[in-house]
Image 1: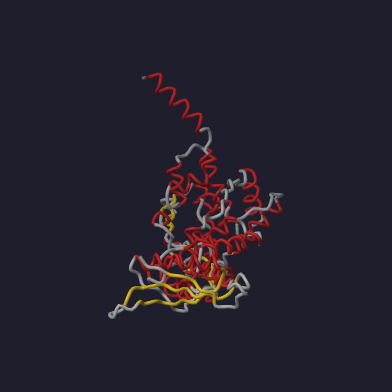
Image 2 (image 1 turned 135 degrees about the vertical axis):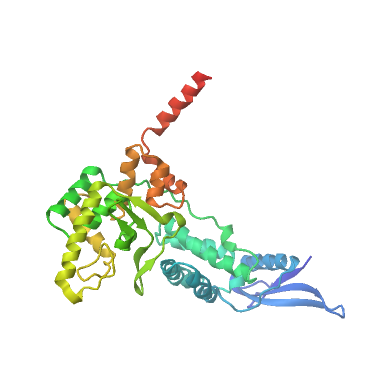
Length: 387
């Protein structure tokens, strides 16, 4: 087995002990003998406490025993994270995902850990980093996301043989309880939609569509008339519209289940027919200025709506109706809660919402299932009686 040691590179006292707890260390690892039988060693400079240097030595010895090369380069975590974002995440993930990861690396990871040599990163560094995020009052869920990004960067470094282990795995994520969804009630949503319709608000059609279909706002904004069949009463969700730093973007659904057909009720079909008629009138009035891209919910010149526009309208209407502050996404939760209250199958609700799996639906809305425990108890008792 490989052997090694650490050596203080700073000043020492009369007894040969380091004068300060932090500083520069030399890590010496025996890597065998050369052809003449002379012992070969590799020296690595390490900055940190003695304990951290000892942890790094242990990792290097394990790496050597497994026959893996010792990385002595000066590549820092910050440099590697930048490479990882540009070479791995940007070409292979959705642009919004890339931008989210990039902001986490830029705002949190690089300032706190970016100066460390990639190969010198220890669990202690990660633990201190997460404690600092907690001290800044970042929510446990947010810290968990930062941890996922850091873990992903180091996992990619392992694939490139730059690391032997992922030190993030040694630091558990913070415990975060999932908040229960409390969607607005039926009366509140009816008041909002009624006010929007009676006052002729341009946002009424899209708000009605969101409430009556459970579609995501981006899916509604990206919907085109080519994907709408008013005769059959259905829409095909095949893309969504969102906002990135470069502007508005069209994206395909995240998962296979996100691409789906949503059936419409007769009231929603009537709302869309009336909306289509008004849109054709706007097109005629705008004459050549109307740039028809085929979007169902477009502005007066045919361009896709700003993603913030329906949100602002919804929140303004809710305030007028005396409804507590609520997010536009709550209409999706509202739709699911009404279906579950109507005793609809959670499997069918999951398909309608386009969740990746039924477990996602159960995790989010399981507490809204009405009387399921009583039904299960009665079913069990009935089976026992029949037996």
